[in-house]
Image (tube, rainbow over all chains, first blue to last red; front, side, top):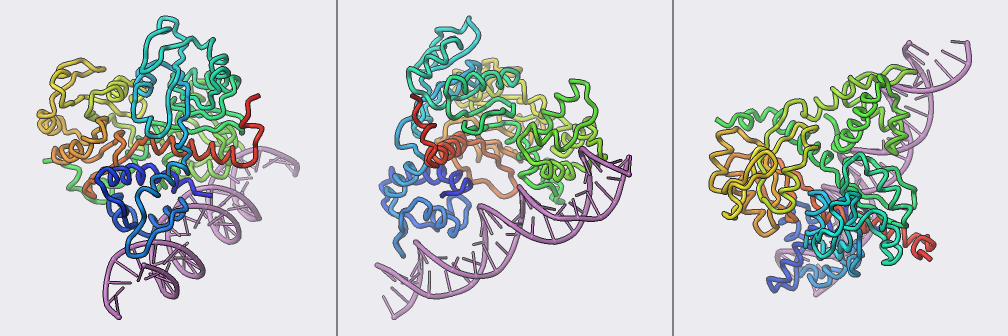
Length: 216
Length: 216
DNA sequence: TAGATTGTTAATCGATTAACAATC
DNA sequence: TAGATTGTTAATCGATTAACAATC
């Protein structure tokens, strides 16, 4: 089984490999990939081993094979439909984001509890009332939901999603959700990400690199 | 020095502790925090040790002290001004997001290269032309920048930011940036996050839990 | 052939977890 | 006191890195 750290590096490899392919290249070495992504060649080879693709000594890996293998390992080969809950600024931004297509993800419906938003067009869909969530999920066999509501209502929304039969939740609300163990949860928490940025800054500044602090 | 995994858990602790404080509570045990966040009490105690706050046997930790200590450890005690580059859907959503205030982060200016957007109000600021970036960063002693431009222009924007004297970059563009080692970089990559979600789904489905796959 | 590259096996490193004494 | 809780030291676990043989 492929480790989570490896999974996290797959999208970066994929972007780079697609670019190489576009440039007409056919082979790439672990050394080159490592150089571009700031990784060690050893780690790249380990990651590539996870895809099941075998490299050729002196030549490297076939780009096309790696692309297919990574996409397949991530389960991105079949397009997945998802619903999104919360038609605020972030919800709208994500619903309209066209980049999801390259991960095989499509937001097919947006739900909100604010009746003044019902029917408003967003991306390729419109805003539906929360009341229709369960029926929609059942009718369209939806497994994945994206939460972009405020923190206060995130748990209620999550409960409603689980009740509707959703199997995986991608949560953007700054709230740690409690879910049954058979429902997959992934957070994208801005606070967490900014905390790491803040900590890295502190380390850099604290490590005596005083010339970096003053700009004059 | 506090480890990155611990830093990543700090915001979750902080949210919970602030909620307890609001509820009028004064003390909390590692056991309780662990229960709410799905962690082990041992791990919570280890994390709390990093803050420097000492707990009291049988009682637990003083909530107020933990809040202060975590905020201070993250460097969130002094408000930090940041600029944001890219007034697209995501850029607008982040610029208007009020939750940043609780991390001590404020977007004080938005820049874009599209002249049709210049002067447009976003949140508490307006859109400035990229030409004015360097001067603005110098005049306001800005250290942090947020990138929300498309992948194609992300590296150029990053280069311009480094040239302008920016010390830390929070990158939302789906692109792995190359930066000098003295500039801090933090990614919030939707592809990476979705890759982990996809992998978790595969694991759940593949582990023979076939009843989870079919909904009928 | 020589040299660059792959793939595997072992060593290192760091975080999590366990065990247990100390405390109120 | 008894029992819940903390804090520390050791053990475990997993990922990264190193070493090196195999390959074209």
